Length: 186
Image: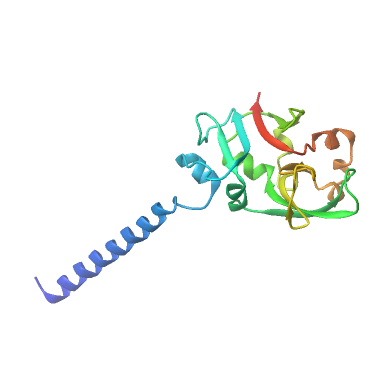
């Protein structure tokens, strides 16, 4: 074997080791900090579960449900918009996960969502509302986490000021606060 062939084989071997080292690092941190990926891989929340999604979903991490703690939600792509609401004063900034991204993460298959609050108040909304310009599941208002008294920890909020179609009793009724579970139905 020539020295050139040996060097080429050594370079390939070293490249292979580098790839394996990189994969070991990724595996040690749960592959990637993406709840959608984590749900598919069976990762479970390490903090308090603040949202359960169940029903017609394909990606789960606890039995046949997808459970999320706040950190898992914050690892998803964040959405922020400013809007006024009929329940708060002035224009406020909301940050959270778009409903579209959340439903994609759990691979939702149904056409309707039953969103339920901590006190068991429930509303239904069509999955078709979950668009890039639609509602989010907000976990912050004006840069701060929302307490239960402040409509938190999660609130399905629509960008009311960005589209007059969102300024209706039907849409207002879908903006459930103190959200803690979503069932994907139909």
